[in-house]
Image 1: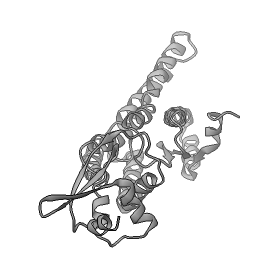
Image 2: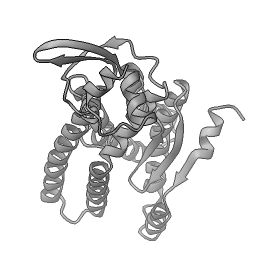
Image 3: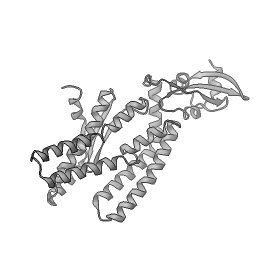
Image 4: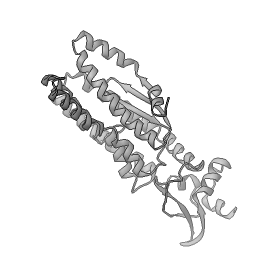
Length: 288
């Protein structure tokens, strides 16, 4: 089995999906449910195949009743080009899905009604996934955009703030238009839980981001961005200034003048290997 074939072994079907499939049978919506599953599967495989192409470490591909998620072991240390390519690889699948369905319709393999349903499902999922709400594809694009200008930790915070605002607006709009829609309630619940968990685990993701740098998983980064800090700044506070897509040199200032320079690898080694979690940046500078 080749590398791409092994992706199929990483597919994880959420238990609630089987419940929803059963409901679709009882309510005579099985055909629509199967269409949705095909679309979600192809969408997530688009992400997965692109990530596999870039040699990302993939944990699982999870299929949910109303969508899916790709879980990887990459935490912001890949190039912006790779990040955006993996994110967009999902939504781009809807283009050929619609084109393929239209061809089958022209060849009379699909009825016009079936094609219309399939077309509208693709358009809705395409637009919904591009909403700037984490963990949707639009939310991931939002994070990558914000992370170009601020630190990794700040980018996380701003992304979740903006996601929460758009999630509330989208949910209120949906409730006004169709308050009895069960799917809307399920999606709202899923997004709320995802945002809450992401907020609670943001420091865990940040630590993984730093650990990957510590273990040398950021070799593709070529942009050098100096960080100027006071000699009395704690090491952990300096680490919170680290930005995705950039390698850092730390310029230590004392009384307004440059006192010395450290490489980010020295800082990471001191924090993770030497356990100097409470030291100030000046202590580290003068110990070399």
